[in-house]
Image 1 (tube, rainbow, N blue to C red):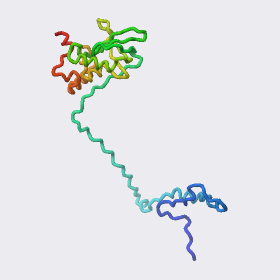
Image 2 (image 1 turned 90 degrees about the vertical axis):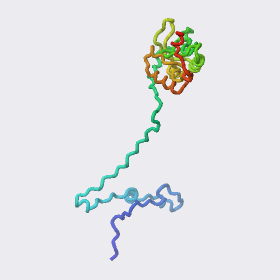
Image 3 (image 1 turned 120 degrees about the vertical axis):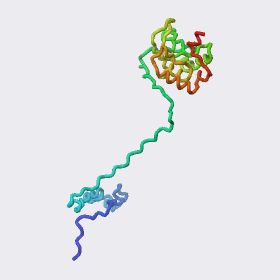
Image 4 (image 1 turned 90 degrees about the horizontal axis):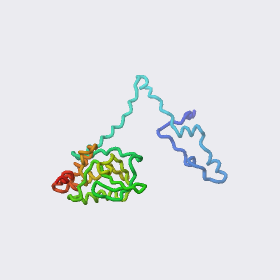
Length: 234
């Protein structure tokens, strides 16, 4: 008697791939075109596309065994610590002011390293003294260079003037901002001005001054710079 064929195809590993004619439309023409375009029966297509799941191991089931848990991938290695044992000190910048705060004036004159002349939209002029810093006076060493530093940052530009009131001479005392940059802080960071701690509420300016001093930037390249408030008393 001839052997009976199995009721279902045996699985020997990866599913068989369908013949090339089933990946796209038939290109044959003529009397055999309809045969080439015929798709595989649904049952056969399912068997080819997704193999049947394997039956549980009867030996493991009889002894109550469970398959081993999946092995988790090793945790990613932590990045190496910085090789620099003494990174440079960086002071956190204060929160910038809102766009609606202060005055929007244009700088038309730079008197010295911490004093500018501005005009408003109506053409009125205002003297503005930069708050919390003190730059070398014009008669001091580095005085002209300090004025040039300030002029490079603000001259001819519209600045945001966040004032802290006026001094006895009627000048505005203010922090200046241009394109989001805190001009007062930038002058200290470049070594173009001292932090005037006697009239300051921003201790982070001390950190910027120490960085500029350690790098001998600007006025700190001089052998013995004299603070302007002391120089005026000579």
